[in-house]
Length: 338
Image (cartoon, rainbow, N blue to C red; front, top):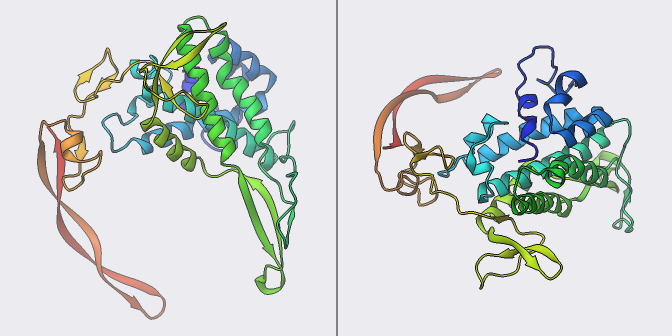
């Protein structure tokens, strides 16, 4: 993916890089040179934005792994950035999700950094054009979505437009999926309000436009991942377009995630396909979902282990003012794929 060159910045080894917390110091000579050529120029022109982008890359990693924790492909390979496996470099359904989430994360991160005053060249988002609801007024400081979308697209899609290493079809799919991520983010902008009044009466509300937590965006994109369309990149009229591979499939819309090749089943290790297999993965014997032992273990069966754990029990309130508990032991069954 075009953002994979953020990998070294996401997991810096230098104690002086300042990337560990939110008060990030970005050193141009140390970090900009790690990026793709088109990103390098943006980094130098907008150095102050880079901490927001690094945080977005970290958040993308976290949410991808959370979103797929109970599936055969659990997004563990994203931790190897920038050395991704084939499943994230070849136009798969999984790559579609990661491209979309990364694009949304970068745009959201910039939009919020504008509103928080972290960035000198932007501030709060523009006030809504529609009149406020009765009993409320526009105010506060809304997330600057337009700036986040514009600069985020320049950063995440620049290499995809200019690059020559990837096939045109793969570049088109990556651009499309990045645009889907930003479109889902745009649609999520909603009204947030704060009450004012005597004793919390909320006689007047101050409202602004804000973006939700990125976890909501990841959940939406996960649904689109499950319904993604397989496409081909071919000439239609004067230009090439992404067309559904299956003739009876519905047309591709701007909100559909798309992919070029089928993914492996991820049941057995296959480095050439980016599959790590599911051996030794914990599974849920009582589940009927994707984390069930039947599905996750791919029919190979599972081993059951008994584990003894300690936990607090028989808790009671002691006047004043503490809760006193005993320590109890109990046995837990763990199930692991063969």
